Image (cartoon, rainbow, N blue to C red; front, side):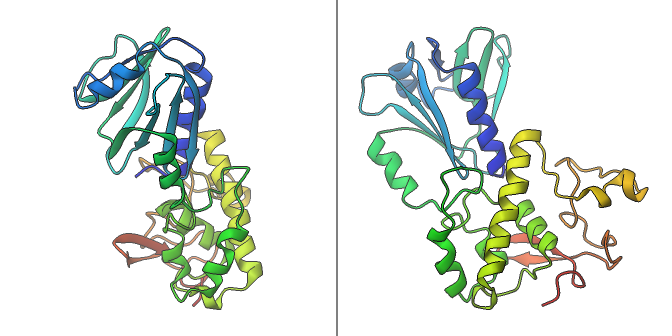
Length: 270
């Protein structure tokens, strides 16, 4: 599933390349045809992201004027030339010489402002957003007996954080993923939030997840670059059994609430 930085990049592209233009909106697959017809010929006023939720607001005079998209596990929104017309496109938005083609989303629905508000009421704080307020979730985290590894994946707390950012931020701070919220200090919570802000906003800028500090990059350590379809340089994610870049201990992996967890037992002692 794409992490939050990917969804923010999609919103940025929609705002830069599609906003303010008369658009052709269709549903080649047919499952969004009636909704697309409502929006066809209108303009995007704003694309916005909260965690892994993408909202595209149109200037059509209709109560339902906001497309809500959640990509889920297999969905993707690609910006392609107009002649690119393949696959099962739930939604297609054409502007000038490009099209935004949505395939395989978990959700693609046309919502009112009230329905959008109901979704946002369940969404936590997004470290990428400048208006995020970590104090809104701080007390909940510090009073919880759940592990910080589990809570970082809870979208009602840390919106947009996924498996990679969860593993990498905890490693960068030397915090065991098994630490319960009640054992975290306020300073540790602040450090987690601050690190997420840094690495996730960097992901928006670069289009890849890079969490390795300069002194541990391949050129600095004389090691091979990471070869993985996720791209970017990471400390522990998908490195089970490989030596830690800092201490040499093999990286461990186990299931945590249905997702693979990676950590270094030496750098992140319980």
